Length: 67
Image (cartoon, rainbow, N blue to C red; front, side):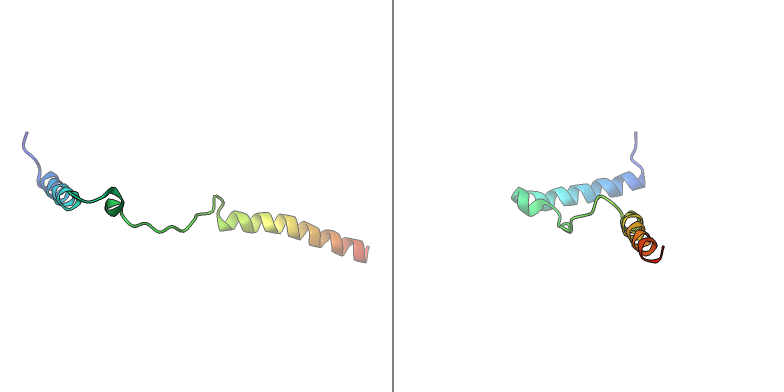
């Protein structure tokens, strides 16, 4: 089965990457990635949680002062 043009391009790119990796240490090969730790909860949900906790606390304080 003949390769399509897209397959040939990807195979050429893969071969070029493999040639570049040859003879290098594993630590040198790994691609650089941003080491920014990602929070398991999104900022939106943190805001909702903060509003529920601190908003409820604020409403409770206000109700105790004025009523």
